[in-house]
Length: 238
Image (tube, rainbow, N blue to C red; front, side):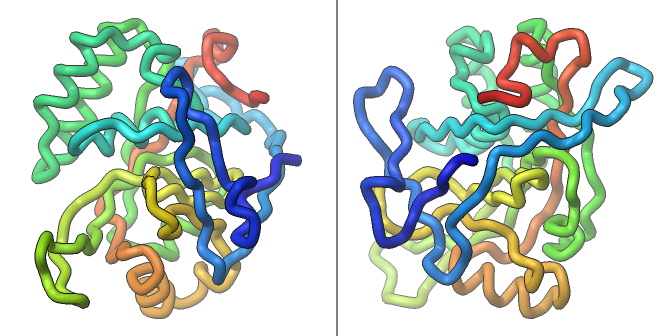
């Protein structure tokens, strides 16, 4: 199986960025488990359009400049770079420039239309969450883009002063892996879901807000891939 980052060995917590010649820290919360395994879940039957939930054992983490968390989350979810996903610069710029965090359905819809024009094998299906962590983290099948309400530090603010913001994260239900973001700091930005997270909504919300600044999940979209084009993706890899 694959080894996740060990909190006591930061050099093992690095993942190379494709083509960037550098590394980003991938620290897990020290309060949580730090080992996950390769998976080989049963393949569900495709839907009427030939699509099925995507899964991968690949791990791709690269920071994009500016507020690009939807595109970042998409690369985390697919385990591939934008170039590997076949998105041209003009298409990527369109998604970057027209993102709306006030209307996330439009943003994800724009990304989906961009993928369609690029003849990508990927698409999305929206999932009902009712802003519930326990409902989201109890899912056992699928890789999800998750729009979360988060707390961010205000520039020049006093300690403990935060602003509410929105941020796209990734939840890999197969590996029970939640990716918040990629950061150059040593602050935890990923965690493995524990059984305790599925029991009490208020307690889970309190823990995630304290440890990661995650307030609640607004919406989620399950990543789908066409059954005839699995070979074009990192499906099941490595």
